[in-house]
Every structure is written in C-alpha cells, then in structure tokens.
Amino acid sequence: MSIHQFLGQNTELLRNEIISELESDFTTLDFIKKFARKFEGEYINHLYYNRGNDAFNKVHSQIAKYLAENEPLLDIRKKSKVKNMDVFGVMGEIQVWEKKKDFFKEFYY
Image (spheres, rainbow, N blue to C red):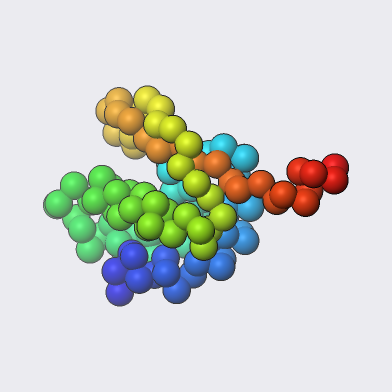
C-alpha cells in the first residue's frame, strides 16, 4: 500500500488525532512528526520501501502532496512557506498550514 493510500484510509484519524493536536498554524514537518509518532510502523515501512532513493524526501513529499490535495477533508488550508531545516540539516522551504476556523466559535466567542 502506498503512503497516499494509507493516508486516504486514515483521513479521519489524521484530522481528529493529529491535526487537532497541532497549533493553529503548523508546518508539514510538524504534521510529519506527529504522524511518525502515531503511525511509527507504517512510517518506517514507507521509508524502508523507498530506501536508497532519497527516502525521507520522497516520503515527506508524498505526505505534503496528500495534505495539499485533501485540504477540505482535513479542514486545513495553505498559508505560506517558510525557511526550515530538513531532518538532515539542509535548509529549504516548507509549507505552513492553518486550521480552518469554525465560524460559529469565532462569531460567538
């Protein structure tokens, strides 16, 4: 099963048990850290499957693509990009996401 398929089968868990625990604004790396902790075995399997082929970059890119393609289902939206170091200390850009605000909570509280 691809990482995309795995994420698709677990969309509700991603939204309710990972994204809900993140700050209002979060990066793809923040999401990946929570994902890797919650689904450690699956995360390791996908890294292993992609070993020798820039595994971290490939898996992290696939996760980022899933987030982008499923913003409405995950109740998130792209905000901006920021400079950030990857797991190997290489500087690059990473997507910042924001959780969609509940209109009624915002309006009444």
